[in-house]
Length: 218
Image 1 (tube, rainbow, N blue to C red):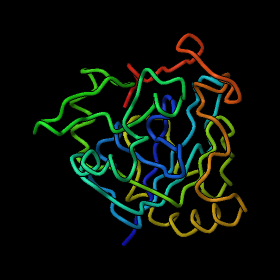
Image 2 (image 1 turned 180 degrees about the horizontal axis):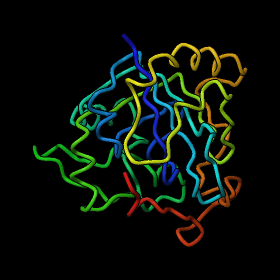
Image 3 (image 1 turned 30 degrees about the horizontal axis):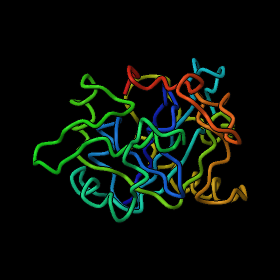
Image 4 (image 1 turned 30 degrees about the vertical axis):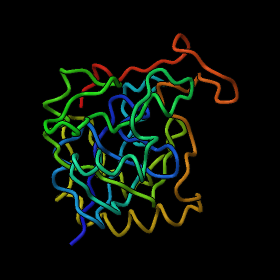
């Protein structure tokens, strides 16, 4: 039986989830969701009361149907062929390259942290998730988060952790609601909340990109 996982995103930085290049992935942070979610489940990321752009509580930042689940090792092993853009390049002027979430290199056996949005203090949490969730049916709104209907507000909470079992009665209504809104699937309808002042039409430099993920609460 499919489940709906819901949680509050403390910092929507473009790395967890990563909605760039036509797929949405959850590869770091939220270890309990990544360990337990299966193909066919849904993940809903909800806005925080203290979001950088203001109060986003009661709003949906993104929703993804889990279409594929890989181990973190498999995610890295597939990166060259399937998603080279997910391997972070912190020297790139292209923002999505900098925010890549394939941040663990398994080529030598044990995972080694690549230069990325996370530091060594995040490794225990990241690696504890074990899996990577991959979606092609996703709706990402970022700083343009949309308000949930009153009938679905019970999936919200402003604490650490997530809901799943208690959401059982809301899965089908949630799917019906999000699919009925007419938003195109698989694209970004807004920018990540912490980088909304970045102009995607011009080249960027490290000094004008605000990435606040290094010490985020995962």
